[in-house]
Image (cartoon, rainbow, N blue to C red; front, side):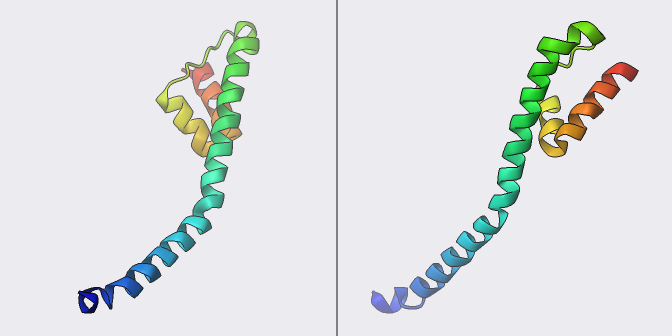
Length: 87
């Protein structure tokens, strides 16, 4: 039984090591996406509560707007406002 697992165990350990390394490398990107989404959703909420009555433009919070704000951050939020003003 050990001869069957003898070569597999080191390969599995090396694969797990590289998987952990890849995850650690991309953790900055994941944290950036999480931070962008938090800032974007808060900005959408604050805009809708405070400024939508003044500007007359309400931005609905749905999967598309959250996705745009998550990927683009504050520029995505400004893009949504401009698109709502134009359309």
